[in-house]
View 1 (spheres, rainbow, N blue to C red):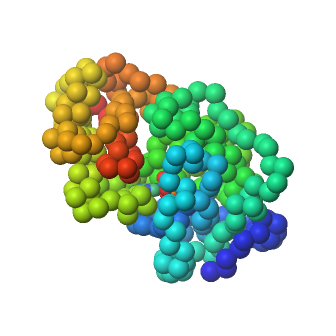
View 2: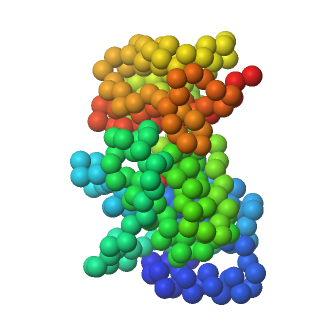
Amino acid sequence: MKIIEKILEMQSIILNLKKKSKKIGFVPTMGALHEGHLSLIREARKENDIVVVSIFVNPIQFGPNEDLNKYPRTFESDKKNLEREKVDFLFFPTPMEMYPEGFETYVNLKKLPYHLCGLSRPGHFEGVATVVAKLFNIVMPDNAYFGQKDYQQAKIIERMVLDLNFKINIKIMPIVREKDGLAMSSRNSYLTTEERKKALCLYQALQKAKEMIEKGEIKIDVIKKEMEKTIKEIAPDANIDYIAIVHPDTLSELSVVEKRVVVALAVFIGSTRLIDNFIIERS
Ligand code: AMP
């Protein structure tokens, strides 16, 4: 695996590969890789000639009181994992390489960021859309892989690709979970043993919603109350950021369950903010 730190070098390698008609698959990450990331990489490996992974902890998507400085950085073990998965190129730029002095162009969406996580993380999705647009122009992939774990992010990228005419297929892959159901996340490493047990409240609340919908419950306020009860039973001191049941494309909150909905939530376990979601189809 070749590690590339410079934008111009990455672009010139890709342009050469494209001349040889190689199909490029791309997986953007912030590192601290786990099985969730590796599932995207394995899919990319299956569907492309060349696999590029980026590791970049993107400063412009973190709010002033968020965890940019303590975000886990595990470069050596990430590198081993990527080599094991037969990744061809690791793009690993510095913040200065991505945002040199004078940088002032940002990508903004009008509606999709103003739901779910966007409400409690102002500016977050502007940072995400901007860095992904830059990475797409650097790596020029045919296929790019994102996780359903960050559902809103994936929908925003899909929209941006349509709106800005990137010729890239966006593939959204299922959430990889621990044995007990906790969605894998780099941020799980912040949890103490006690918090790790409480973190299961997100998955359990989603399971509760699924059961209720399967039994025919359609009133969203009723479902949300039960989800809250489940969370409080497992983690009485958890701080619920939001619980929402939304339209899968617009992300607007619904009042009754439609044919296909996304149930999503964000909960602080101690100081760690965790997110999770289920896509649920009503039979
Ligand atoms: P991150 O490093 O957290 O920015 O994540 C990089 C990519 O991996 C994003 O597209 C995430 O949605 C995806 N991802 C993170 N956790 C998981 C998971 N548990 N299952 C599947 N994909 C994931």
